Image 1: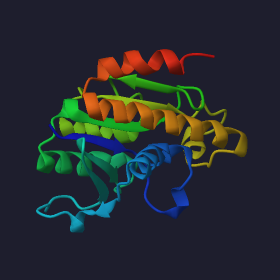
Image 2: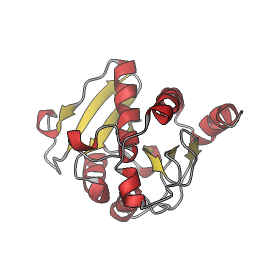
Image 3: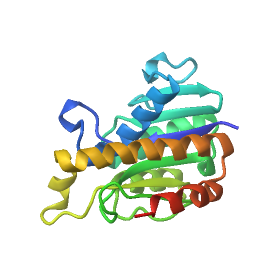
Length: 197
C-alpha cells in the first residue's frame, strides 16, 4: 500500500525558512534522513498530470514525499492529481503544515478535521472532496500583528533552535506512520512524549 506525505509551503528562495514553509522543511529533513532525492514532475515516468510539484520516492516503505509548488492556497491541485496517479487513498495521505493555534514547535497529529483557516489544507479538502486524511500540525505561534505577514517572516534565532528540534521529532513520527500506516497508534506513541514539559 503506497502512502503519501505532503509538506506544505510556498516555492522559491524568498520563502525559505519562513513559518509558512515549515511543512516543506519537515519533508526535506525526512528525505535527507532516508537518503531520498526530490525531483520535478517531468522526471517521473508515466506521470502526465499537474506538474507544479517536486516528489521523492521511497520503496521501503512504499511511499512518496510531495512538495506542491503551486503556492499555498492552490496546494490541492498538485496533491489530488498526484494522489490519483499514484493510487493513494485520502486515508493514506498525511499533510504536514504550520499552525498558528499551536505554540512554537508544538506538534499535533490528527486523523482528520477541518482546515483551521490554513489555506493549503483548505485547498486539499476542497479538491479531495473530503477532510478524512491525517495531518501533522507544527506550531508556529500566534502573531500579535498581521497573521499574513507573520507567517511569511522567518523564525528568529531563539525560535529557530526549537523548530529544528521539532522538525526532527516530526520526522520520527512520520517514519513510524509510513511503516505502520496507523495514525491512532502513531498519536498514542508520540503525543505523550511531545506533551512532556
